[in-house]
Length: 102
Image 1: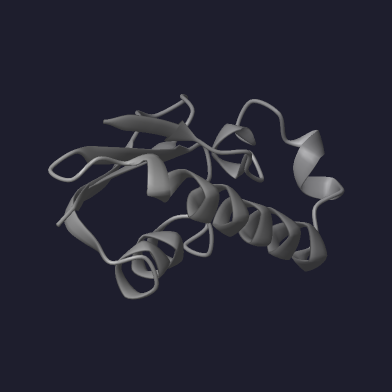
Image 2: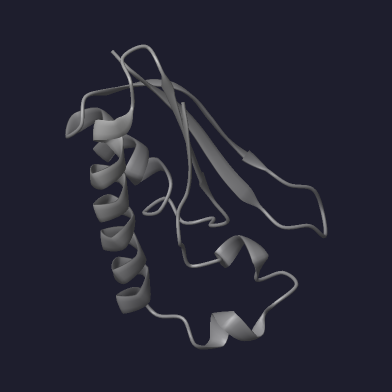
């Protein structure tokens, strides 16, 4: 399998780093989303049949999480297995999705 911890907005860490929110805008979100798709597209060909891809961000934005999972299913033919947000009160939020090659 492959663990893909992609660059992201870091929005899941803003609870302890709120200064980053002040300088964030939609252009940066689009930049990270596009970069993630480039990385995903370049990585998936190395995923063996029957293997799984673990996709991880420290973002709370669906554009970096659920929409990327949908991209992997629709455009790259991966099979969805599960996804979830991880975190507790006063901690960072992480997103993880598990997809497999059919």
